[in-house]
Length: 538
Ligand code: NAP
Image (cartoon, rainbow, N blue to C red; front, side):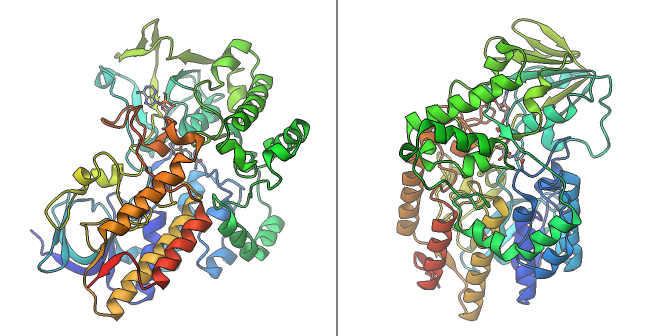
């Protein structure tokens, strides 16, 4: 047994959040270390190596904003950069600031318990090591616990099978092979479009279609990158006032103040624009007003029909159970055109569900599909999943998992009552799940760092969210969520996941704050300015 190591701060996770968090702590001379379960850094960009994995935020709005040197030196080569490049970027940042020496890999924390007497967290790792820390900061991701389906016979399959999150590091041969993809969320849509012309046969097993609009990716030349560099301040200022923290800002004219022709003209313009334009530069009414949503959904349905040759297939690709923007929007590159290829087949699981996986492929209620590769693009136990798989025991010995069984409960998505000195960057009920992720986490890290610095400066050793302040925040999260047409949608925003017990349709979990990035930022800054109102500091 090795000796227990002690640090002022332990940061959980060496992904986008953990990297910036350790940078801030190291700069302040605070004794801190990052514990990462994987064998290397990068989090989501270390793991999701499936073909087609790329940003759907503009690369230059996704990158860190904290370092002028990084902004000046890094050249984003594509408007929506791909996974290998994104992982290179995170390594570039880490190497530039020599942060790797503050990181321990293969160090998954599977349990941690608060010691009220010592005012310390005791952490136990899957590898047997133990640590103590005054403060624990989690940067464990919102989509880091993959959920394969639970079909009988999955172990019997003789070919290659994996969840997209676990796509192997070594290249997977696809040429000439029969590949099945289960799932048509953002991941499935990326992988299907990317491999359609690289495989022998591709069979897509779709339970429910998703709305999806063009990514409109393009390379970024040296000259364009120079221009972006010169405008970084302006770009980040724009993200700071946009509800979803993108460059795109909502159309201010008012849905009902313009004619149907003017609305269609806007949508046609936005359909050709890059990224989330059609979602984020649209009329805000489409998220709130059923008639407005029906109209924009009908428009996008028309665009899908124009792109898919077989009218029957086109209808199957158009969602009927939810309107546009009601679930997290996947962005696509020639996704719909993939179905025009002779080697691509669509199986409608709503009519012919999967019965089992066999040693040779997939058996539905109608037919057996012979396959060499099965790709599970079946999503994640989102937001709370990464917390649930650790045993986190608070002041009374209660676990966070039990406390959050029906719904997360946090103060500002940053702290949880009963779990002192546990600070969450990208926690549930923050904006990290509902806005451009790095813009939210930079804010979260800055706030958490400020609070730790405040505690150290004032000799405070115990910080706990007050129960009443937390209750009020959860009420605010619920109010912001319930305003939306998406309030009952079956996507990870509402905690829906058919593969996780207790997360099925009919149960709503309030996972994210939907009041928008600017309002959230103003709120947490005000709380700090007010001497950390709502936090019991001792
Ligand atoms: P997802 O959106 O949850 O989609 C999962 C898909 O798998 C759905 O189509 C679902 O069908 C299907 N599915 C799940 N379990 C199934 C089962 N047992 N049998 C048949 N089908 C099943 O997951 P995701 O596509 O991995 O995306 C998750 C999130 O990751 C995205 O919303 C996004 O936030 C993020 N992401 C981002 C990017 C990017 O561009 N930066 C790319 C990929 C993902 P139902 O709808 O019927 O449940």
